[in-house]
Image 1 (tube, rainbow, N blue to C red):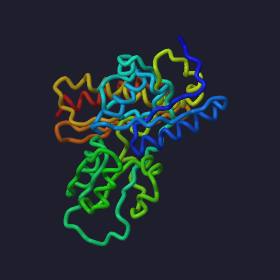
Image 2 (cartoon, rainbow, N blue to C red):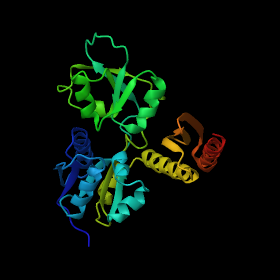
Image 3 (cartoon, rainbow, N blue to C red):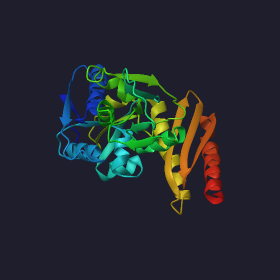
Amino acid sequence: MRRDFAYIRVGVYASTLSIRLGEQVVKKLQRVNRDKYIELVRIKPVTRKKGEEFELLANALQGDKIDMAAIFLDKLYQSEDDKIERILKKRGLSLATVMPRESEETVLVKKRFQSQKEDKLSICTDSSERLIQIEDRFPESSTEVFEGVNSCLRELSRGNVSCAILPMYAIKVMSKDKYRGFEYLNYDRKRFIPSMGQGIPLLIERDGEGLELSSKRLLDGDAAYEVFMEREIYDKIKELDKENRLDYLTINAKASLNKLDINVFLDIEGCAFRINKKGDKLDKNVITSKILEEVNDMLIGL
């Protein structure tokens, strides 16, 4: 039975980045639901372990503590390595909307007026998927992954690392007052492509709850198309890897008008590769087939 909501409770994980995401979602929902009150509900972390964000938001939805949840796509995949539909279905949830990517760019962050010279550059990042690209670009550096952008900036502030390579969308929504002692340099967006789905916010709800009319007006067709293309290619490549030789894999799909641009980054037993295919959206099956052929040749040839 559908409920008649006088207001909508939007739940977010109580981290700085997720709260900023939630604030953006509330503003967008309020614009198309002027007759309702939209409340942002912060779900307090318990262990701050990988995968906890989706776990807590799913539990809050099931327990009727919130009506919708805002989360970045990669946080959902950190919980369970499966298709979006199946991950949500197991929890009795459904995808309400896919919002536009926050950003595809990456920035290099360093302490302002940092003058000391180091024999070996030390770099940190927030994503293990990004690590291989950093090591490829800076082979002589020492690299480390920390959980979250806040942790990376904290290490940088303490002088434990020389610089951090972080997603632009995260830096834009962080508190400027808190981190005004840093410099942010535009970096190579093509080489340091985001991990799959990292910059795409999702809005999810209980299956059949009836909020979809509110949320679907926020739907971004290209972002939704990109989400499912990325996961479809990812799943098919994983199926080819019968012997578990892939150490790293991420796919980035960019759709605009009728065009499609797909980048695949993969590492096979220490050898890094990049595959780029472009074409029309109508040719997506042909593009996918060509990518799978190249990956299969690599798996067989190496």
